[in-house]
Length: 615
Ligand code: PEP
Ligand code: MG
Image (cartoon, rainbow, N blue to C red; front, side, top):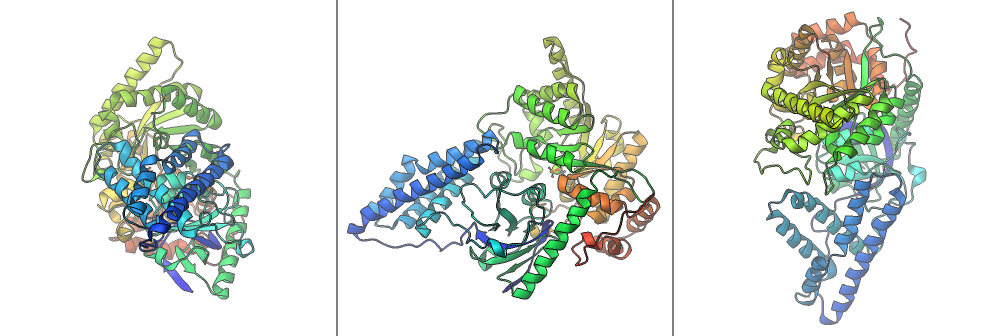
């Protein structure tokens, strides 16, 4: 047994299942110089591997054709044609025939050569496709190395616990055929991989990189799949087919666990599942503190299909719709009509509840083919989100027009990400005015949506009183606020301890923002991951927040957490915490004063939910 390996609890739940290691370590490629008479056989092996990989991707395409959006299907089709690309075939042939290398070695060299050519190019579309070349190379290599279909997880269904959150399951990463419930173990998972994981039977994720606020964790929580991220060196400890325990409550992983560890993990998984069933059965109950004070719980949504799920979980609206996913991994920009249809559908689905559409937060790690981003040394501090939108006003206008048209069908609000200067709010407002004037002139139905800002850059929090005069609402993006205030990359597990949302600087920035909103008489909510952490949620309520937006699956849990405290208790806790000097002191105070009442939510073994309180 290896473990426990410590990581970060990325998405809650406990699962015991076999592993599928997505990245083989370097050196696993068998390299062999071949004799002349072997050349034809090696070329034939290559051709068979191409066919096999194409076939398997085709099978995945067939299975998901009805459920995945068009753009994801197009990626699968692109992978199939990349596999059959004559440039790749020629390069492999040269390696085999001229240099006398075996097929695996030839593929490795050919793919590396193509990647080098991609690196030398400036075109953002091609840069984005680099990942796809790597992916295709890996599929091909697996087909060759295994001399059998892509790695299939052994049929060990009987060794698998029930899914931690049974109502949604994941699809295998593109092109991988998985037969049994499987835990994907990888160094990292790309947005393309994670966004496509929506079907059976992926039941857990383990990655070497990432934090609770990194993309993989956000997606895993949205998909309701237990995940542990930031587990250093885990890929080196696991082989495909090993049994693993993923404890997404405590952030721990065991490889080839002993029967005792397995039994305990299964018991925890079962307790978690039944606890969730109880919580879910209460999803219609109001979100309120023990004293009756109402707290509004809304959902964060990345993909259109999540909106329905969110409302089923009892969300009182969509507090954050991350529209940038509409632009990622596609060759053409989404048109105004396409965006309008989508936003309108969501607005109608949610009505009369509100929907907050965030204008695209592209740039940094979320790149779109058709939206050029300058080459920058520090993309997280670069031309991202509203900065990119204002650099491309015509393109941005298309989105604003679509949003204004959708606003005619429901309570639609528009939110601007990564605002750091008031000038940006003014510029967006001018563009929105132009969009409204154009729509009026064209006779297209529309309505002015309220325009709010994300407070996720310290300058905006510090000047929140000034922003409150011109923004119609605030939403605190604590994921980025923590990253920028503490100068700690939100994806770096090395810095995860530094990047604490309980740091006094963050509590002060949150408090300043809430006060400015209250004084300026505008609504304020929190949509960063702080909102879905039970301890932080109680603290935020104590700091004056009355609206929290989070991944759909967390809503029932946060509802349960807040109902155990009165407003007086929350406020006393916030006063106590605001006087403390370090994040650890705050965490300690929370651990002493409120954690015992939330132990069933914080990874403790006792997951019994107390009966509902009356108020
Ligand atoms: C945030 O930064 O807290 C946020 C909600 O936005 P995102 O995670 O999409 O950057
Ligand atoms: Mg953000």
